[in-house]
Image (cartoon, rainbow, N blue to C red):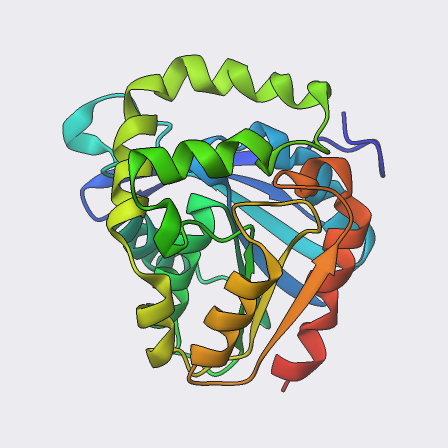
Length: 257
C-alpha cells in the first residue's frame, strides 16, 4: 500500500512498437501539476517506489517504466541504453502523457532518459529532463575504471535497497548488456543537441557522478542547465527521496505554459 495516501499505484501495459512495456502510475490526490516519466537504473524499478511516493506528495503524477518486464525476447525492449530511451519516448507519445512533462532517469536510466528527451523535444515544448547519478564518465568506460567507481559509489547507501534484488534475479542476464551499452555511450556529446531545461543531480558521495562530471555535462548542454548536489551517494533516490523529489519539482515552473 502507498504510505502517503493508502492507495495502491496502478499498473498498466502498453504496446510500444513491437515491444510490451509495463508502467506503474502513482497519482496525487488532486489534479497533477506535472507528469514525471521515471526511468530506473539497470531496468530495476523497485528501488524507486519511495521516490514515486515523494513525487506524488508534491502534487506530481509519477509514471515509472519497467522496460524489461516482458520476458519473450521478440516482444520486449532490447536491454540497451539508446533503444530503452527510444521506447520511453514512444511510450510518452502513445500514452498521451500530459504536461508539463519531466523525464527523469537514474544511473544508466539517466542515459536512456537523455535519449528520450532528445526525441521528445521535437514534439512538445513542455519537457524538461533530470539526470540523476549519470553514468559513465570517460574514466569509467573500461572494466578497471568501472570497478574503481563502483567501489565507492554506494558508501552512503542503505541495505534496505536489497529489495531491488528481487528484480535483479529477473533481469540478471540483461544487466551486463545494459552496463556495456552505457560504457559505449557518450552523454557529454549527445547532450549538445538538448534544448530543453536540464538538471544534473547526484548524492555528494556518488563516485559515478562527481560534481566535476556533472558540471562538464551541464556546460555542454545546448539549453539551460544546472547542477544540484544532494545528500547520500549513488542510490539517493532511495535514501533521500524527499530531497530528490524537491529537485524534480523545482524544474516545473521552467516548463509550465
